[in-house]
Amino acid sequence: MKISLEHRFAQRRELLQKSCQKNIQYFQMGFPKIPPDLKVTAKVDSSICPIEKVGSTFWIRMLAVFEKDLAHKSRSNLTTQSATRRKLSPLQILSTRKYIFVRNPYTRLLSGYVDKFFAVNPAFWKIIGREIVMSTRYRDMPNAVEQTCGDDVRFDEFVSYILDSDDRDLQIDGHFAPIHRHCGICEIQYDYIGKMETLLDDMVYFADDMGMLDLNGTKHTLLNEGVRWVNQMFFRNACSLFTHRRDAMESCGVTLNQGLHVTWKRWQIRGMISMEIPFPDEANDVEITCDKFVALATEANARSNPDILSRGKDLALKEAYGSLSHEVKIKLRKYFEPEFVMFDYESNPDFVFGEYQNSENIFSFFGNKYN
Image (spheres, rainbow, N blue to C red):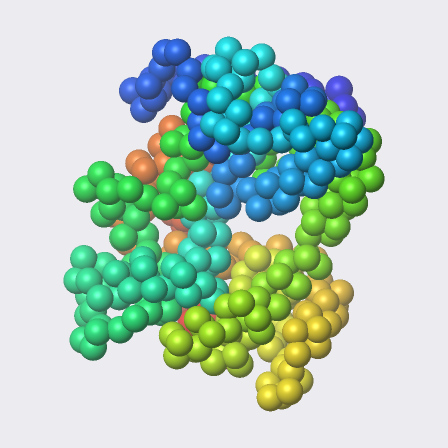
């Protein structure tokens, strides 16, 4: 298995190197600059650059636990730090084993929209969301009344905002900026390129290669937050609505019950709960707690047919991209252009460019958001 994975990583590495040379117009080649988000683990001579919406939260958590494990083992504080804090030279970085994860750009973009605008995320609603719903650039009939939050941003409006910002050379949030603009993807020659599409194999390989599996705390984190990620996601997504996000959510006019409804849909879009399992009646109880809601989600996950979960994820992609005009799809393809060759992704997938028609008889992920 390890030999097979090594061969796969070698193919990905070779493809990226060749693609960087062919697409040199997109990059500033030359003496490498240190990406500010590159994390270097001195004790095991390795580095990893987490990218938003490509498992970055998991890897940052893993590195934090790894740092504690290594410090406890060696009684030293010199472990995992950002490259800029340690002021490493480019030559020192180049001498480490370098890891990075990538993802299909189309699925990554939808994931960013779902997490930051469709789901309960007042921080994004109050800044970018508000800008979108109040502007004629992105909404045909912008909200007439001044408002604090933009919690009802549609996917097509979000995509228009991203493409317009790119056209005007405005800074784009890292969650939505293309992967090829992250981590010095061509300036720093990464040794191991993992993919979200082969997440489990690549994640375990990276952790083993860095020595994480030799330490109990880090191994426990990998098991509970990597392999069993669904349980952690249920807990984090749900409990935030009852705690630190509740006041901000309600200040945007969204009730707890509405937040729970959209969170259930979020899990259906991600393929964690079958689209055939409706929002549970028990969750409408005014006395609902985080623990009870998580238990309902966990039970629904256990009852979900894996085939339907997969079909639901595909339908969510088709519904979202089906809301875009052909012209916008072409511009979006151009926005991601280098990545299709760099990481071997289809530039014209059917879920983006295929025909999509919805009707009242077909389940809708994005319609009636709070119901």
